[in-house]
Length: 235
Length: 235
DNA sequence: CGACTAGTTGAGGTTGCTCAAAAATAGTGG
DNA sequence: CCACTATTTTTGAGCAACCTCAACTAGTCG
Image (cartoon, rainbow over all chains, first blue to last red; front, side, top):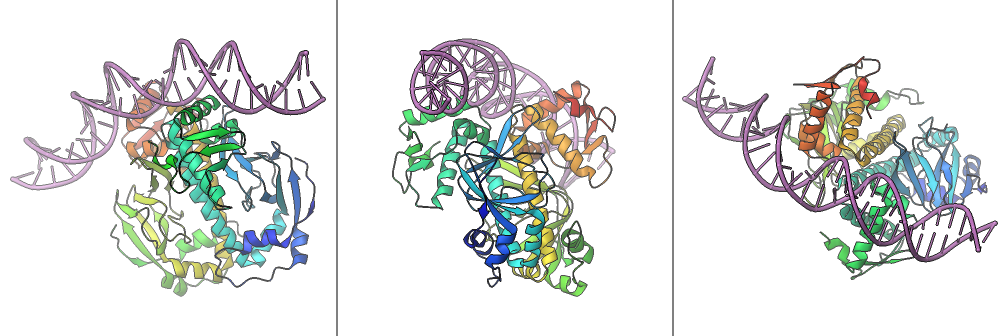
């Protein structure tokens, strides 16, 4: 909730909003300007970064760690709508109130921009806006993939697809590996998949018993070749 | 699939990309320019407008009717990830291939823009891009709400939430009413909710038996006052 | 050491899916 | 307009799967 603050570095906003496949020439964003609109916050693990329904006066972009975006339904059940990794935005600059809660899974760092300054920046720098549009449309596709996962009938399918997807997502930030790090808790996984923690636990144990993976402290050790993991052949 | 073509009218692209809460002064988009990049297509009911995985060379915006965006999972099961109403985009200009299939529910009309021309237009008109970013971020929230719906444990909750949400969505385009028009089939509803058509049918019958609603040809007749429908008090 | 949290394991009940068939509806051609 | 077919929707029976509730284990931190 409370974080250490320091100035945002050029690299962070640069890679998030300028990098990628934009067709613009690199716009003129100077270090001085960025220092004025952004600052950095650090949050300890398992803390609330943003609370659903609270007034939103700033936009946040994750720069380090893993965060969980969630919504509550009417019966006190939590649904995690997505995990954020560095480069992901935690909220929308167009919302007066936060539509999701954001909880830190590990220790996280984020860039905080005043909403007004952020929107002004987008208007003054179309290349940044173009990049943000691109990022946002990618998130929609991720949300659609998540729906596919939630509609799966069997718990095993949901969990296996989650492991595959999480591995692929981490893979983009390093080499694909048999080791899948799971910084989030069983409860987080259950809330992401729309299952109970008991079911998650039982299915993981079943997969371990079937020699598909090994459960280790930091995550999962997939059994099978790195190139074509056994997971892909399940069911 | 096959459509009648004519020129897109100013009002359509105007309301979609220029209207709303943009902070820009109204940009200078002329009729001549719009005629060059957009054209209109009309599609009969229950036809495929776009197929998942096919190369994408154009961007489409719905202007009339209802369409269903869907994805297939690995086992031939269809998940409808959203219904599109006039003003909604049917695909992303940044995708080389369509990430969703789009099927017409009713007869629909759409504006078709060449992807290149559309992206050029956005770059030349930051106000349009700003508006599209706003629309896109709203769609993310809609996707998150949909996830909440899919994670509900009981079929009755899913269906009731769907009816409430659909009524609210239609309401924005007219007055809220006890009559909820459902242009889509039971199969579409089931595929949207991650249920089977049998379960949808059974739950609807149960709600009718409990005097919560009446099933009519074009949709549902909610029983209770318009201001505070009984549906909101269920469960 | 005791309290607390996270995770695992077990038993039983409910729910929605599967398979099957009837009923209603829509569409077609004589 | 009616008979006929195809499609959609409804209804039924049985079962597998997940949830609920509960107890238990292991690790952590004061």
